Image 1 (cartoon, rainbow, N blue to C red):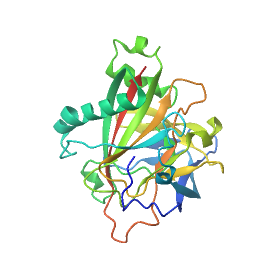
Image 2 (image 1 turned 180 degrees about the vertical axis):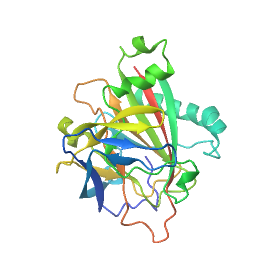
Image 3 (image 1 turned 60 degrees about the horizontal axis):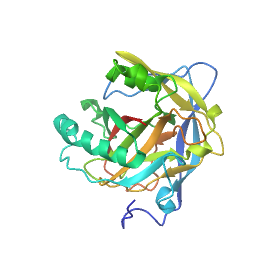
Length: 275
């Protein structure tokens, strides 16, 4: 973990709005026309809450994947243009695979779904917007789908092994100045707070967790993340033994952002790690 002069280390907390699910009994459903189009939440309502979000940099090296469910890491890359699909496949996938192996001890890593995001008004050019809704990307049931989609011949045997799904999130182009990512300490989120939600796209239907509010939720962010840093966090773990299994997370409007803050540009890469 690195600490730079611009990292906001003197700021213990910020208070910002996080959009939880107001659960009314119906299955929460979001619809999207695809990349560049916003996700529209239906059959549910938003429960905006003013929450304290603590500066994760003040924790030093404490946050780990099996406890907090997330970890900030220094990670240089040889990718010069994250808009270049060829570089992502030829360079970045290998870099991230090596990082996940080193961090988790996984024997095999299956990478998928690189997603670029921007908060700029030109998101319609094909990039997705930051998600301003507290969520976790996979459920017990949907966690198996990437394995079945990408390795159908091996899927059933692989699904017998312990596996975890992690996301590796990094800013691209420049440091984060707006719409940073907040993550909840996995130990502060109860299973009862997680509600299965449908995510409907033009050619598939997915399943994720929406999250309902509880006052014990403890939130963190890492101010002014640089392009040489990544957040690795769990969105699923098949082992049920008290370790972190998933991390509620959301982008948020940063009240400390500069007046002329540049739009957030980021990329996330998901991976199934097998043990």
